[in-house]
Amino acid sequence: MSAEPAELPVLSPFVFDDGAAYELMMGRWSMLVAQPFLVWLSLPAGLKWLDDGCGDGSFTESLLLHQRPSMVLGVDPSPAQLSYARQRISHARVRFLQGDAQALPLPDASVDAAVMALVLFFVPDPLQGVREMVRVVQCGGTVAAYQWDLDGGGLPLQPILDAVHAEGYQSQAPPSAWSATMAASCSLWRSADMIDVQTRQFGVSRTFDSFDNYWRTAYGSPRLRELFSSLSPIALQRVYERVRLRVGGTSDRPLVLTARANAVSGRKR
Ligand SMILES: C[S@@+](CC[C@H](N)C(=O)[O-])C[C@H]1O[C@@H](n2cnc3c(N)ncnc32)[C@H](O)[C@@H]1O
Image (cartoon, rainbow, N blue to C red; front, top):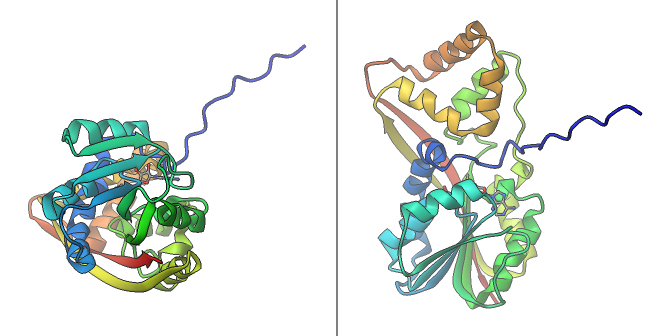
């Protein structure tokens, strides 16, 4: 009898497995959006928040900085992200739990506000994820999200993805990329029976010390890291040069890049 091949674990390219690399790649961008997003939500201090898909805790940190919450519960499925978040924020009013947005480990009506920051496009069933946020929020509470404007090229790593595609390589889109437009978010929020549904786009810019500092952030993306490690040095250099020309970067001058996020907010009846 022939032996069965050993089963290898299949890693999803959207499970973030390194909190520190994630922070450089995306956490800092997320905090840039979080500030105007929280101003837009205009909610009072002292609320109990759910940070759904909290990742490495970047939005949790923004809540502590700008909202003076009574409590923040951060939920995320990735042990690596949660471990980074727990080291980053050790605060009596913050708890991090492992869980899935589609089946939140929280009782009904247990928070005042729930937010997904850069998460919905990763959730396989976005409507179920939104319904779960509605379930755990009290009546009248706010449910909101922001996601990169993927269709409009607003992703911070878009210049790198464009170069990858121009060189003929594939890169997998997030499973629910369609949910990132303002129209799709609005429709999801209405389908989850929310009232006062509003959308807004936020543009942000981030300064890198040099082009190389931007380039290195791509290694925080498991899908790009996997692709880059499979390329020959020459092929990788071609992608690098294409990105550098596109963004006009040099190795000795600061580089300013922009990104755009689409936000949606509504209230539970
Ligand atoms: C781009 S990160 C956003 C992290 C953080 N909210 C921020 O603003 O930087 C996306 C996060 O969604 C999490 N995620 C992916 N699928 C999820 C799901 N089904 N339920 C909850 N979180 C999920 C990932 O583990 C990851 O930490």
